[in-house]
Length: 468
Image (cartoon, rainbow, N blue to C red; front, side, top):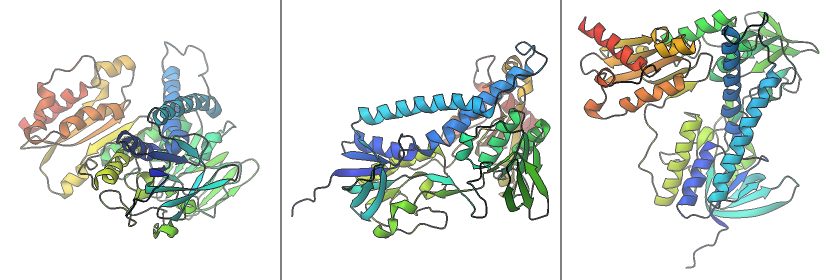
């Protein structure tokens, strides 16, 4: 029986980190691969509306805060002020460089990028519609769905109002607001609260829960709350919005508890939904859940055997870093039938607030609940020479370790460059057997002065607690 001839061995839908990881692995393995991207530029939400622009904004604001706080540079009577639109220019330049870089990957590996909308006709056929309305049917032996997610939009809020934004559309903010209400105090809400407050904007942060980022170690969560409040952010815990009203000159939010807040604009940042509607996945017997996400097995295969899904479209952990790995693992399974490699158990969390937060491993609360005999070692950044030189003295590094084996169980960092600092500890945590102990940090000579030296300080602090 003759083998069925398809246009491609595999088609990847969506060029974010997950799709890119899958496409590059497939291409490098000799497969005929095409990338379908509905937007005019590659990179997905990560490059255009999420990770890249928000972190570029955060970097600019952080440098502005440093400048205004440093008398060596800021000698004028009034602090330097930048508009949100001013710092957007920097983020746009980063986006352009990212698009050019990522485009070179596809060109170098011979992967055509087809710009248009894809939808399934059957398990081997896509309907591909270009921006000009023309369409073709494209066939492949296998598919990868990597269409990502978008901000959740409650129907009761008018997002067409010029003063109401979500985390995508806020990047088109043109005016210079004096005040903003941020609904949702998850990672995105907290990051934007830091950014806007750093620009001198009055911020009301409305949190549905009883504390910020409750998945974090409580001490770190409390530190974030303190520093946001200390900078002037008003945090309102345990509040649900009842209605949002947009006017010509302001937005008014009414909570279920009866509180009324008003500001120049409102940012809704509470949840995300998978981009699945236009794919017509019902034609290939797939049923997304209520959040637009698809179910997959350990090899990222959906219930339809030749269709795989990776990234935000499958939910947890919804991180760009993990999504790229998911794409590579799915591609391996597509080639070999299965993939032995899995995401690591302890995926580091990076939260780009001001100051920054990063953590990996267990929290104190988790260890206490499991009755693990642990101890804590801390290094305050204000005691580090490098932090004093750079005037980044806010923050600390916290090591959780087993009292008897000295095995590192969790690492939590709050302060500038936390997301970089965490990887040193993560590398030790991932070592097997006796390779993962607190002694590594005590016996290792660190460059001086560095922020990495915090590990040695924290380790010594912890050992002192154990040894009395």
